Length: 101
Image 1 (cartoon, rainbow, N blue to C red):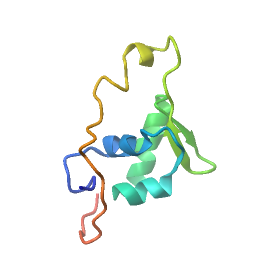
Image 2: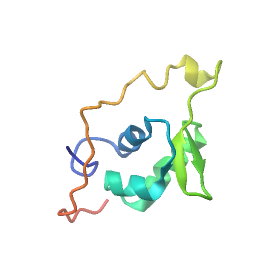
Image 3: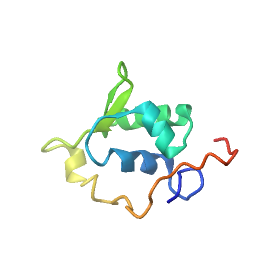
Image 4: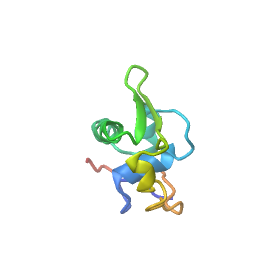
């Protein structure tokens, strides 16, 4: 198991892996599970929300995947299966590192 800081996994991919189950996730939990700093998690999630890949509830500070609507350009691009997330990248936080992003 690796965390996003220590592996070649990109922050966006680490966050999307957590969201694959389609449930709501609190940004605080995503920060803890990916070992990314709060600023990076907020930027990535705002980007994903801007382009309608996720639903972002800013009041509750939570996020979930937003599946493409029928007939949308995202659906025709097959956005979720075009480059499937590698499930072999298990995310684990190792708090012994002193790395800063």
